[in-house]
Amino acid sequence: MHPGLQRVLFHERDIAARLDEMAAEITEFYQKKPLTVLAILNGSLVFAADLLRRIPLPLRFESLAVASYQGTESSGIVSFRQSNLPAVSGRHVLLLDDILDTGCTLNAVRQRILAEAAPLSIRAAVLLQKKKPRAETLVADYAGFEIEDEFVVGYGLDFDGHYRNLPVVGVLNTSSLGLR
Image (cartoon, rainbow, N blue to C red):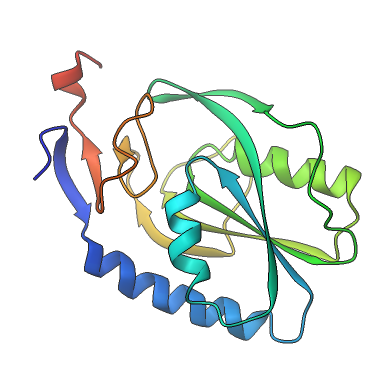
């Protein structure tokens, strides 16, 4: 196990099997629909790459850089790191994010797209969805795994830019970092 992890929640094989299932659901839903997949960077990069290779549909792929975390907590403020949204007018949009925690990021992106871009629909897919009350009443349409309210890293999720490259999802060992 990686020294920065307290424990592993999901191994590579578990993640791959769940992505196969999610891709099948997404493929069935979006058959014959003009689809744009919008990955929320940086966290969803690994998830998006692996999921999209499993979806055999013609689609457009775009990304949007946003940030809301400081350390191990969401700041509650979503900052958009690019001024223009991808062109999604008249298309169905599937937002991809690494984790649904407070709901602030997905909600802010969804609201901005609705206000500026006139999509046909917006749905969301996340690798992880925390079991917790959210400030924003938002549920992912597709969720890989539901987890407890713990700080996790790996498979695209990070702490201070580290751990994104781990092939597993695990609980961060915050005591070794002097946190909490």
